[in-house]
Image (cartoon, rainbow, N blue to C red; front, side, top):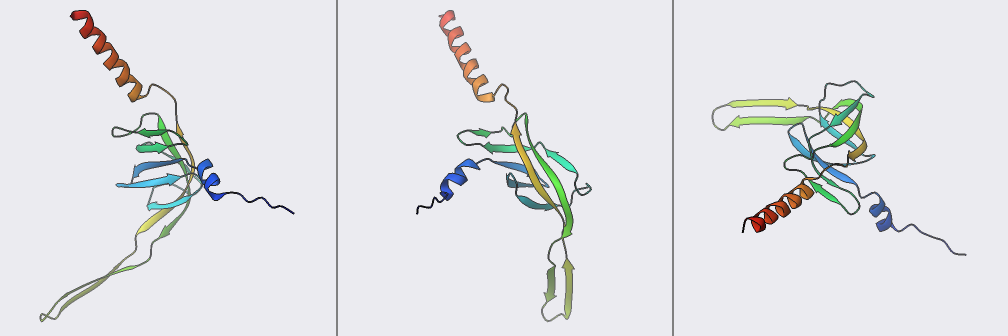
Amino acid sequence: MTTTKKNPKNSDAENNLFAVAETSGRQYLFKVNKYYDLDRINAKEKEKITLKNILLIKDKNDISIGKPYIKNAKIEIEVMSHLRDKKIIVYKMRPKKKTRRKMGHRQELTRVMVKSITIEKGESKNSTKAESSKKSTTLKQEKS
């Protein structure tokens, strides 16, 4: 009797797609079919939102880095629910002055699920730079 086990390294290699995007003033590493808690977004539940400030996308063998953002790249997310983070207690005290202040804060969050990470194939900046450098070298050779 033989049993076959899935190698976890191979399954990670198949789901190797991830992206770094900027939202809510922070940078997050997004993977498909995972949920994330972001700062509150003005959207209703089950609404789909597109993020366009993509800094990096890594596919199986390809890495795309933006300067500062990648053109034609997007992450589609779906709002799952709105919630509040755990309470944080802020306690301020000045010793020997009988001054004390205790405050609490709960951050408003939106839980989102990443549906897809896509980059539309077009002219990449790297190929454009390579072509322009080739043109400039050929122009210099023609001049001399």
